[in-house]
Image (tube, rainbow, N blue to C red; front, side, top):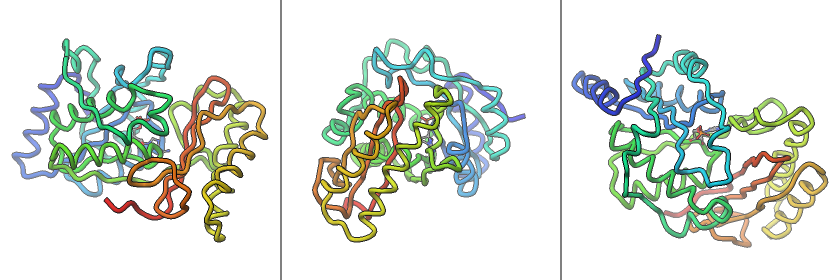
Length: 283
Ligand code: AMP
């Protein structure tokens, strides 16, 4: 059975042994309660590295005071099976006290953390950037894998790695969806059957927006309006934001190329996110 280690010393020593054997190291940071989306990252990491570490840590510092840190789903035994199936080598599953021993240092990325999810979750990305920096320093991987499901997070991590000269390749992986289109998420387990049906409005609205751009629409406002009106048809949905943002700055734009179209929608009390990307950034 794949080992689960709880301390920084243990994971460091396992990685050290692997590196001594000349192995390359891949890291997949997660908050656990793993699903096929996480598994796709692990499988990719296994295919590109000799030794794969999955971190499984519900990071308290990236949750706001009224968010779901306490209730976030956890199941390390199920995660263990999934990691083993995917071919990972070890799981790092620390307690918060192991990661934060009266810490006074944080990492924060400016500007691109203020828009989209950063507008409604002001401390979120500093929590993410800090814990990911710590994981990078603890594991020192050659490559680290992140999902495009959290597109803003992926861009923030790429920027942080560039700005702080981490010698780590950041690999973005495509969004994995349920058969009916809902992006897989650990938070989908919060949805009751009616909410689960209602949650389809996210992918349905994004598909409408994407199809408009594919068939030549060049006004981001028109696309945004169509997405908003589709979501507003769903009585259980409440929009947090619908935004079309420049892929470099993550600021609102009226172009439809080189963009991230990102949405956050409450379905009942559950906040879900989804997105699509058109083209590439220039940086
Ligand atoms: P989380 O456990 O939600 O923090 O996610 C850990 C990593 O898995 C992040 O890089 C996410 O972007 C990625 N991830 C989560 N859900 C999906 C999905 N449906 N498809 C692809 N990647 C995902």
